[in-house]
Image (cartoon, rainbow, N blue to C red):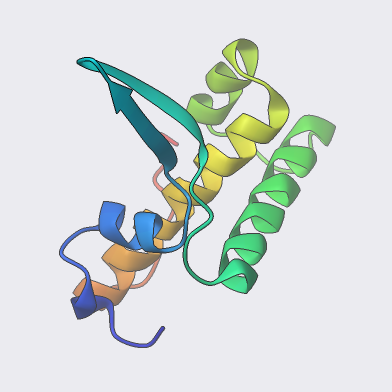
Length: 109
């Protein structure tokens, strides 16, 4: 993927990569299931493996965990948090590609 302008938002990029939940609705009831797995499996795998690395190093104390991921780990299974973090990273990638700015971690993260 070389052109981020193909997507209107970071969510569209994440959906294209298959990092959003599959939606199943019937009778006015919406259910969210597993990730949709659409798009390029190689890029999706790279993002998920990268998210696993971030979580693993933050557990060992070698990297500062984000408050967001640490709080989510108290409520959700490890792999669910890893996919959520991969989704967040895809959205950050889209934002960086569309604005042309460099990534800088915020002190509050």
